[in-house]
Image (cartoon, rainbow, N blue to C red; front, side):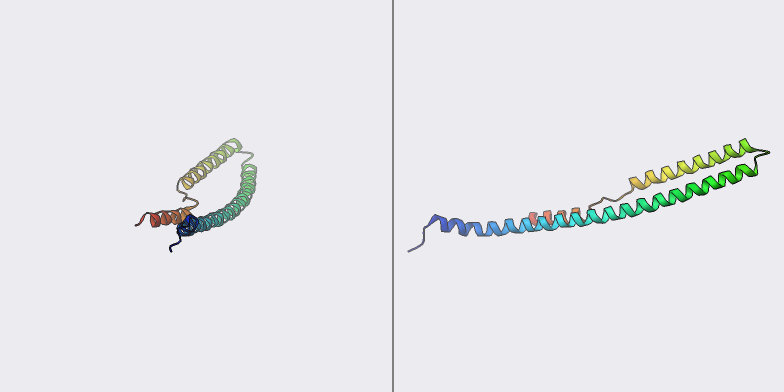
Amino acid sequence: MPNDNPSTHASHEHGPLRRMLSSIVSLMHTRLELIGIELAEERDKLIAVLFLGLAAAIFAMMALISLTALIAVAFWDTYRLQVLGAITVVYGIGALICALKVRSGLHGATIVFQTTLNEFEKDRDMFREP
């Protein structure tokens, strides 16, 4: 005599569904771990770049102050205002060039989570295929 117990059929029918949901949850867990790893890598890169950039800016500023003082002292008796004006213009042009390079660098930056987005797209395509 066949077993017509509804609870037996319900648990048997939910087996593949549960396995599929478990696979999806496992897949999402893996993708979230990947996001976390990429975020940590980007944070470490950003901290290193910021620190080195700050150190470079400090040393460059000290060098420019020393150079300005040296040039001003050398021309103090003859062309002090003209020399200080020229130095100011040179520094202004240098600042403008740096600002434009920063701007272009920010516009050309890559997407932060590109690997994770690629994996999500592969997952989406996998579920779309018959």
